[in-house]
Image (cartoon, rainbow, N blue to C red):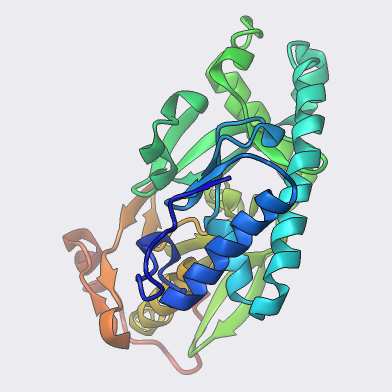
Length: 317
């Protein structure tokens, strides 16, 4: 077992684990190391990843989601959470190997094909060639995946090459339809803060796929568009814009989005988007110091100038 974590106890947590104190981060890394040591697995832990663990198929194992899950627990439970996380991954490696031996047969593989969303930061570790992907938002891309019973894995370009009669467009269309059928979206009308908005949430990884289907839900339609937030893979927030009560919704949504994105697990996007006429436009903001500093685009400001004050009880959402 090799570790790069040989620093002083007061070394600050890195950006990817900034929700930990220096001591919490030190304890988390040591707990991860202890798991591999106790199982006699050679690996290197550093910079938010585990490298070289052959029992997991080699390559890199990210630690950010595991760290986010541990953050919400007492430190005394971390070892159990870490062991459960990696043992599940070890079982999944075997399942994936068995699947890959049959995935060249499109008739077998087609029902497992899906599309999921990822934060673009995962592309900063020289993994771009591992994905079949398409840009979607400033900080989010969509990718082809296999939705297996116990895991979700990316479709590698060399796997898709074994289906030469299937175009990329056909595969993405199939993947999106498979996810629609397997995970029907349930929209709930909820008051968050002072604003009514639509929320879809669940345990699986595909809740943000509603971004592909916004125009299919009449209750979301508005000539002024809607505000969108997809802070994690488990939730989407949607606010149809009908009047100037959207100003209050901006404050609520930016705070909720940034908080959920930072807490995770499954962080996806910390941004606020305005969707109208099939287009997503990022609406920049900052929540430093606990106060929202909203810097809307010129297009968004032009739209606001056409709105009227809300009439009576808010009806937006």
